[in-house]
Length: 516
Image (tube, rainbow, N blue to C red):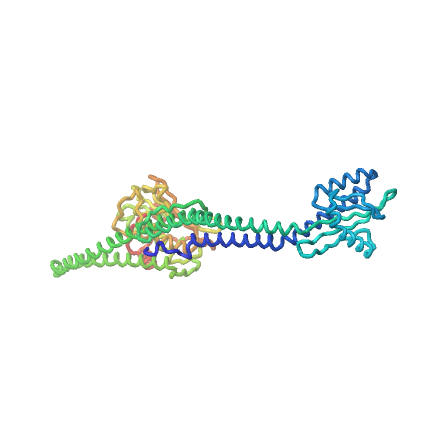
């Protein structure tokens, strides 16, 4: 900050000023180059074209029958242009000289008239044009000679002389004028460049100041733009980034708080029951076994939390890959549902699988089982008073759609997009139960995103919630696996052997509930 008042040669202000000065200087150089160096040649070319037009008009006027009308036209042409016109007959008698009565000019052009006559005799043509060099460049004359011959008219010779020396004085006048023009242009360029550079850099400086506050950890800053679309777009982008950083910071703090709570609770339980075994139940086999089981359960819960954190971290870092294969999603869903049979028997839940056939899909079987298990666990937690959870499999075009439905409290429409966030708490469920890790739906999102399939959630407050996802359909097997029916239609009760196999497949021998 101590160098704040030093001139920054890389700043927009300095470069805008420099570019304006360079641009103006470049224009002035071109103007000087054209007006001073090329004006002489340009004037000569324009004068030649003008004289050619005058000669053509004289020839046209000569064709008119009335000789008086011809002289009137010559008078009008001569008055309009800065040209000396001398008309004479073949015998040398003068018919017209402009300016008339100017004996000095007549005597002055006598030598030039003689030179034109010589050129006409040499060329044997009816017209000649050339430049007569004077004693110096300021006395050059553009001379024309034309022989006019028409039926029933006296043959005439028209001499026209255009002095070229006025351009020298004109160049001197323009040079003096360009000095003032150059000075004024450079002054205006400085003023305009400073104004525009300030107008451009002022909102950028404000954005930079706000960005410094953002870098210092002050989130939720609204960046203000300026008078330009690009700067407004930059401000809007930084504002969105600031808001997202604020949300991310809040989620990070919430994540740390929740994970700390979830880690502390089982650790406290493990320590407490270990002390109880040491001090109280060490010699009581029944109590000791009961306390040891609590320690094992809490250790399993702690292990599950760590595994979930590692899983979602690996997914988000891109280190986890899919092992795609064709598998029976109907059997996978049935196997997961079987692991929760004990909850039907002991807690009065009703679980239902609706699948018209065995659908073969393509994907990572283990990860899709984890998706279904997490969605099913989440539905159990919020299934409502009827304690009913329904899994539905249905073929839809080239996909098989899996839907996990509950009839619970539902989720507000404005909160649906946030249910996939880690530890997000919907307003209808203010307190997250201690069961589960709070990461289940985030893991579901990462797995399905990795599969590049469509998924979503539908919910109505007071009516329930349905999570769904699609997988690429491969084929349909005709027969479904035979098993005793559950309470709901299309459901099956597993045998103990089936339950044991399902527990091994899912790695989830006990049901967990999950935050929406």
